[in-house]
Structures are given as C-alpha cells and as structure tokens.
Image 1 (spheres, rainbow, N blue to C red):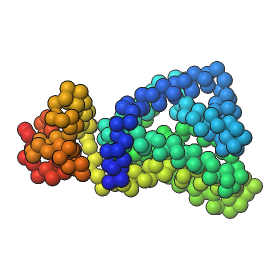
Image 2: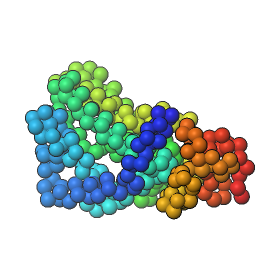
Image 3: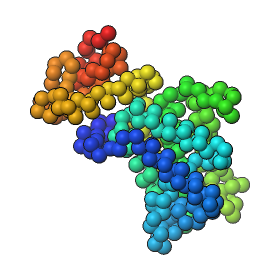
Image 4: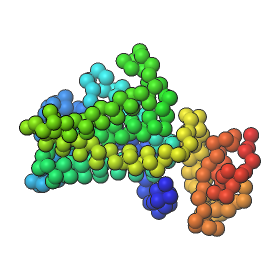
Length: 288
C-alpha cells in the first residue's frame, strides 16, 4: 500500500475525522424523507445515469442519503451498526485511508451506474447498498471471528455473514450468463446488474488485495491506536517536537524533518503511545 502511504503524506491533512458520523447523519435525513414519501428518493434522488445525463446532476450526491434497508423499528440499530463498522475501519486503517476507501466507493458506484448504462442502455438506479456492503466486507476481512447476534439472539461470526453476501453476489453474476435468465427478455437487466456489482465493489477488491497480508489488529490495539492519535494531536498542538515536527522516533529521535522519506508507525505491543521510524519499528525493545 505504498501508493496509499504516499497519498496520505501529501493529502492526509485534508482527511475528515469520524467521517462515518456525518454519513450516518445523511442516512438519518434520508430515512426521515422516506417517512414523508417512500418513493421520493427513488424518483428524484437515486443514482440514475439516464436522469443525470438529462441534467439531474444533483443525483451524483443525493444518492448518498439512502439509509440501510430496515424498517422503522430497527433503523436505529442499523445506523448504529454501520457507524460502529465505519469507526472500527477508521481505527484499523487510519482516518485518511478510511476516507479514501469511502470516496473510492462513491466514485466506483457512480462509475458502475454509467458503465452499465453505456454498455447495456439500461439505467438501474443505485443507492448506498454497495457502499455499505463494501464497508461490511472489509470489516469481515479484518475481523472474521467477531460475533454478531442474528435477530439479537443467535450468535454468528461475521465471516459467515460475509460469505453469504459474497455467495449472493456470485449467484447474481452467474445468473446473468445462464440461458434461463441471461437469455430471457430480462437478460439485459441481469447482465447490467452483474456489471454494476463488479464495478461498484472495486474499492473493496482493491483494498482487500492491498491489505490481505497485513496483520489484523485486535480491538485492544485499535483502542491503543486511538489513544496514540489523540496524544499525537495534543503533541502537535502543543508544539512538543522541535521545529514543528509532527512525528519522532522513540529510539533514534529522528523526525520527518530529518528525512522526508521516513515513515512512522506506533507499536501495539508497547505499554503506552510510542512512535517509531521504519528502521526501529520491528527492532526496538518493547516498553513494558
């Protein structure tokens, strides 16, 4: 993920902390609109490539307010679930990479709608379903053994829920090429939907391939990273490091001002918030 690290060093200062909080606010607004008019979102706000090409450019943004599918009784739980998933991903990847992941999801969803329309001349309006699915699949890839309670009763590991979701998408893609579906009068719709699935989930595929060999972080490590990030913010605000440096190795004392190519990371095994350069991250003696 060197290309992501380079982007982070250049644009990391523009990342939005706690981005999922603002996304949940958008979902809540969309849910309130659906209570007033259940069909308003679909006809006027969804990501519809044909309508956008007719001048309804606001759909490029307004599709983001569609809440996760749920009834009124469980909407609060659904919003909390996705907020939790988003926050856990931000703890694991960092603020910038989570921002980048979500932004890539938005771009690929828009691209999926237009590609399907241009290839098949079929407009299948999109909402946030694939965005939320990409969040869930990434969470499952990072924490496969985390348990959810199905119907608030049955414990099930998140990896099995993810495999069910993947199987569902796989079936939809294969179905597009089966004679009884792909060869029917509605075949073009099945094929357009299959293409949308592949393109819309490219952000998950890219991040999964880039991070598949990375060590997963436990909840404890994520909490420690959160404390570390807070300590680093306080250090930068207080001017703790000389000449305005933002990072400093606990072993050698070097900062990014000494060498702009240096990368700094925290150590999850040290008892405290300690930052190390790339030369000492794996060779230092852990602080107990």
